[in-house]
Length: 117
Figure 1 (tube, rainbow, N blue to C red):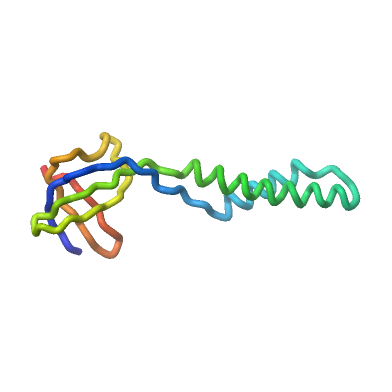
Figure 2 (figure 1 turned 180 degrees about the vertical axis):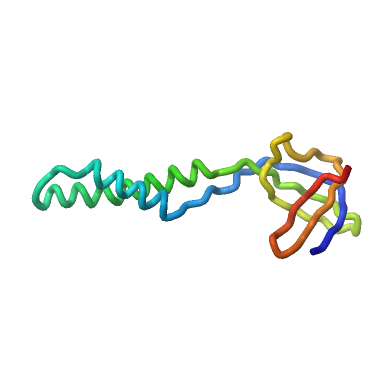
């Protein structure tokens, strides 16, 4: 793991896309198929198939929206003179501020910005 320090020079609010899994797609498909069932013959089968596809698309969109997160794009002037930008979820305390002196940890799990106290 690499550890460096620097000063925050700019911050921009961003949205980190949510996740989509088989749970959202599958759950939506089941609900859509059930909602469109009840017809008979070819027309009923077509309606149910359309309900399954529509439900899957809607289920995926709902899951992505529900798991979307507010984040900060933090631009840091490093102590060695280079500049780095890191996107990370906004902390519960409101996040970072321009001018803060921070620690940047880089490793196998990605890059994380932490306050230096």
